[in-house]
Length: 310
Ligand SMILES: [Zn+2]
Image (cartoon, rainbow, N blue to C red; front, top):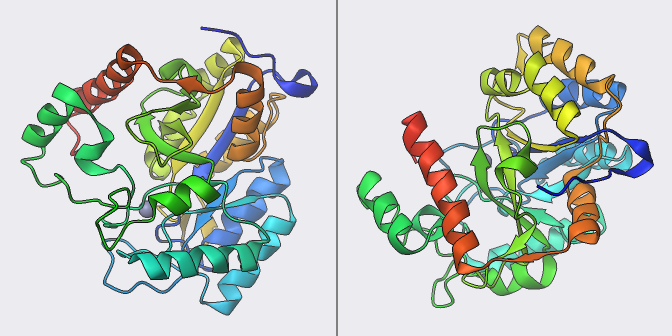
């Protein structure tokens, strides 16, 4: 794997993409005040509109004035604001377009990054559409065909289609999440373009840490030491709304490990800043058939091995 020379003599890069699930003014400010204090400036996603149907998992959205004000405040401090679908439930095209324009109004520009939220029919290339060829067949068998053709943000004939707007307005979308702290080691192809998924300009991967338990496990001492030694990149996938704050207090192990990490001299900037730097350094990989099959197989194998619902 090509070794990246990080800017300003930094030894490695670490950042987080925070999916908005269960985040509210009760827990969000505690997490972001702490991140700001330790100088780890990351990316928070939002929902713009109140959902039109009951979501599988919800949380605050930008129609709540106080919440919007807080998100704008953390943006002013340097945190990046990104999209986690326009609302927490399935949203049809005309409302998605409205939501994207509102995003621009609230935050000064269209989102640079989008990540799909669970259960939204307007998710792009999600469910079985994440995979191709025999991997898609295996995935459908494992999931008993429950996720087949269910997500249609990229399907032109669907009322949930918005792929053209994603292509015009958004640069990066997350796909695979791996159980490895050095995201670039797990997915050296990133950022990459997949010609079978034309509405996404550049895909990136992440390291698995969906809730506080899996997050602290991933950034445990020996893993963060190895990330530093390898001069690697970690983009954590998480939901800061899931267990990081309990009874009005931050999880102690999270605080300890993040403070430890913050003293290591890494590059701690938002996700799209890291990805833009990677694009300049190593360019955009135009995925070959072999690379597509490799990355899809790697992901599917880790899922099967973990015995997780996929
Ligand atoms: Zn989500």
